[in-house]
Length: 290
Image: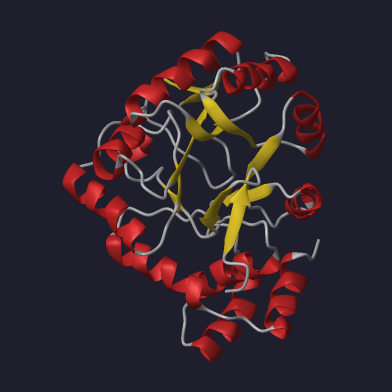
């Protein structure tokens, strides 16, 4: 993989293939996992494989994912722990196939974001969070107020870099008038061109693009081109999908998540794959079709 690293915010260089820590909690992203020892071992194994970017959120558990990360990995030597605030959890829930969240309520009020950030600092055992992301815009709160709250926390030294998630191009533009935005974390969805437009915008401003659910975006119409490349590389289609995400742009930061060691190791073998330009172009052409 060429350009194997990316400097988040221009000054924190990490390996581009990260780990999403949503699934190390209990069912429905609620409560502790059935085997906390195994969850902590999984996190340590991810780091052994070369992961430097671990993405979590206060809503995962809630709080459980951050606590497990602290127990397993603190003091985080060479790691960037990215977390998020802006949702409230009142019970089990998850992400449906249509991308809708159940059991999650947006809360982008400045007071809530301050409390959420400070609680994440305590759970993670940090004085400053290197990448803190607004988990989602809150339609009940002016977007500039939510971003302004993160900018205040940054000015106080509690946040190093600010990211946004689940945003439109227009919302990203508004956010950038308030603060420097280092990352965008949006769902990878090939059903429309918004993913490509956002990626282009991130490239233009050297903003890291973190596609979440990176292995759920590929429908049966994409599988043939992935399978053709997989047969040439003695790999599986998930590995080719991740290798393409790393090859298609120098700003992509995929964060595949899993609860099993075998799946983790399978995913991270993708970092060693080298797709040629014909393969990259063929896959890009298929996923870019309207």
